Amino acid sequence: MQRERYPGEQRGLTLFLGELQPVVELMLGEDHLLWHAIRRALQKGTLEALRHARQVFNHQPREIKQLLSLGMVEDGPSNGPSRDDLLDSYAAREPEEFVSFDLASTADGDEPMVRLRHELVDIPAVRVMVRPGTLPSSAAAKLRAIADLIERDRRLLSQRFWADRQLHVEPADPGSAERR
Image 1 (cartoon, rainbow, N blue to C red):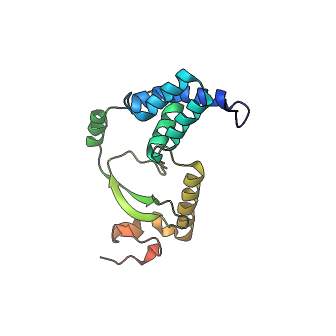
Image 2 (spheres, rainbow, N blue to C red):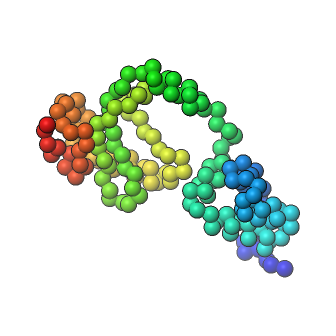
Image 3 (cartoon, rainbow, N blue to C red):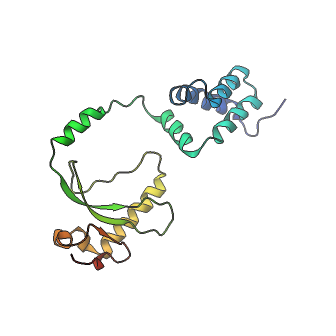
């Protein structure tokens, strides 16, 4: 008989796997190996089976683990608009221009990509969009990098700056884009 590595390990794993099982069933299906490992672990209830199911979860690709973790903490299915409803509302809008600061890479020290974009969205003065599953510390660091870039070159938010410039400005020197 195996012993718990820490007090409450068996109870914690049982609760975790009990919450995870319906999410795995919904997102991955009953034929997925993880679903079977969880079902077996919850039926047996042994520490060995519970640890094995957790290990199967841990060995899933990062994207799947993030998706499953998000599914566990969400309040339920999203009641968001359908794709067709969104497309209809976009079709009724006029394109608006805005300055986009994109920082997609995960490497520290990367500068945001700055460009003028046109979108069919209702744009407030400032909108921050962060992908679900992004670490809060990573999102905050990226927002700081964007704020630092704006502080270094306030012209980036000027309509005159973009009036006759290319649609993409290299972040290393935002003011050096060639005129057309």
